[in-house]
Image: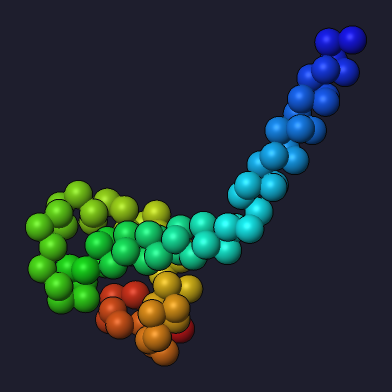
Length: 89
C-alpha cells in the first residue's frame, strides 16, 4: 500500500513539475547557456588578451572546459579558434 502512495505521489510531483517548469524550459536552457558562455570567457580571457585578475584560479579549469571550446567560439561568432595555442578547427 505504501508503494502505491509513493508511486502516486511521484506521478503527481512529476506532473506538477512539468506543468510549472515546462513552459519555461527554453528560457532556463538559454540562461544556462549564457552563464556557461560567461564562464568560458572568464576561463579563456587571459589567453584572449583581456586582463583577468582571477587568472591564477581559472587556469586550472582550462583542461576541463577544453572539450567545449570549439562549440563556444562558434556560438560567439568566431569562425576559427581565436587562440594560437588551441587549434580545434
